[in-house]
Image 1 (tube, helix red, strand yellow):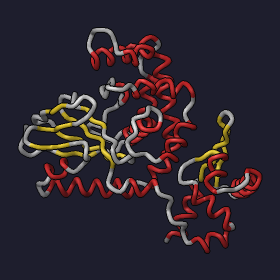
Image 2: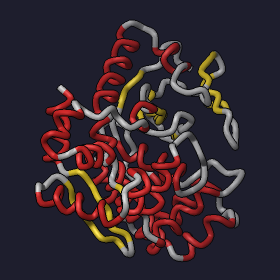
Image 3: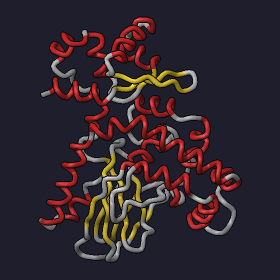
Image 4: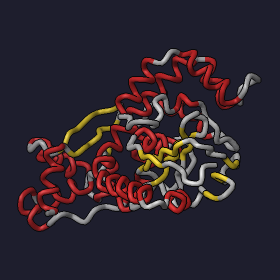
Length: 318
């Protein structure tokens, strides 16, 4: 093991989305609030739910590399690039990755359905990524200052010679010491880093989320919750609520503040304790002002803030 590990950082939202999928859809609870679990679960269609089901198998933490087709080693990777890569992926790539992950023998039962219909699995998983990203992209934009601060923190630790301390403080589920990286997980192990670089990927995820890849010949990457991510789960204080209320009305001001992530009409009605008819009226007024969008998905109507509304709220926070 190198005495001084070489640290790099990647801002790749795919790992945030994967952590949320594992927490909200696959049942590996890692600290994501229930409101976000419900919002994500409601957004993903049946084929997406089916595709992520193998991630919930008890007793397993190993998964095929295809879950992250573009690894965050060497550059940041956009969500659009990840989804496009999955759409362009030949089905036999999934079969190769499954064999690499689990060996040449019979596959674990939870991956057999995906192996029997790999094209269907790829379509469903790509759809799940797209659906979850459409729900969490506003959170990613709000969390950008936290990610920028983390870039600075990693840079300072690297320049001042403190990468060992930084690695030991990334997560309570990760221990760094003389023996390498100790990962106390479903399948615990100690990993020698050798001279490989370490790519850190901060996530906006539950406090116990942790995703690692140790197989790359030149680097390992560690995705971990960025410091302060828990502040994003809480509802922000209404920005200059009196002034905003004077502009759009108190109910609509509260409604805009509540839409930190897209929500269904029923979720909004429950959250704000407003009758559906009254909520529809206020949403109609906000839509006329180009402050929200409405999208029907199946039986649900999803409401989201527009960029114009985000700018308005930011103005009153100053």
